[in-house]
Image 1 (cartoon, protein in one colour):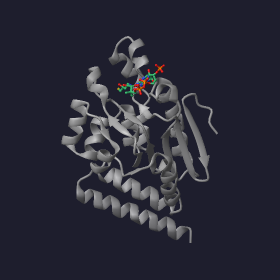
Image 2 (image 1 turned 60 degrees about the vertical axis):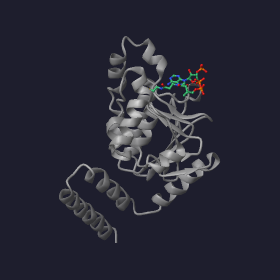
Image 3 (image 1 turned 90 degrees about the vertical axis):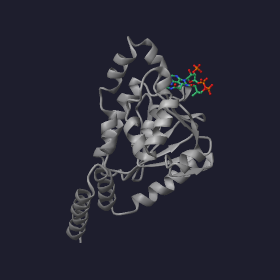
Image 4 (image 1 turned 135 degrees about the vertical axis):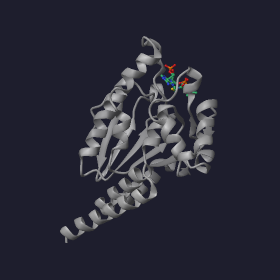
Length: 245
Ligand code: COA
């Protein structure tokens, strides 16, 4: 199952696999990939058979080396190019997906590459992964969520250091600071992501979705409101379980 110019989309049992597939350009994120991702994310969101999705990169060298610089250079100006690029709200769509998303990243994970990984719920890296935000060196700032998602993941000071100095970090450091959950050998990357996905997929899907929703929405709320949200979502899981008895 595929049919996309820049992505491979596959479904095995209840797991969806999305492979960024422009290895000749280190899977750089271009306008076509934006369109393809928009379509694939919509399909995942609306497919109740999909319990978990895994995002990965094709080729040996990269998960994704950031925005496609050749499109930047040919566009009338970086600002106009970015307006066009982000018009379809891939990032809002990403964050609205109810199923858990796992990023399995290797090699270069730069710019939009980090941003895609940060839109996922769990990140697994291989030992060769390198993370960086080169935007500041290009005179721009990230616009696919990193200024918001990165500090929420690794804290303000660490995020600002990466954003403002363009210091790249390796997999070990990324794991230490909580940017990724786990580091594994390159040859074990997909296998580890799959094991995790299968485990999640084996659980009650309503409980899984509601647990994700409670965390995602709750993080934006004061604690008391978060606890109320949790109560409602827990009740919903209970009600659905009772109905299916
Ligand atoms: N956009 C478009 N093409 C890209 C790309 C990008 N962001 N990153 C890499 N490529 C292309 C290269 O142009 C090259 O194409 P070619 O073989 O036709 O010349 C190919 O991918 C391989 O990259 P190369 O630079 O030869 O690999 P490397 O191992 O020497 O260096 C990087 C890897 C990631 C350090 C280097 O490619 C790089 O700095 N890329 C740009 C990163 C960036 O600034 N991203 C934008 C963030 S907003």
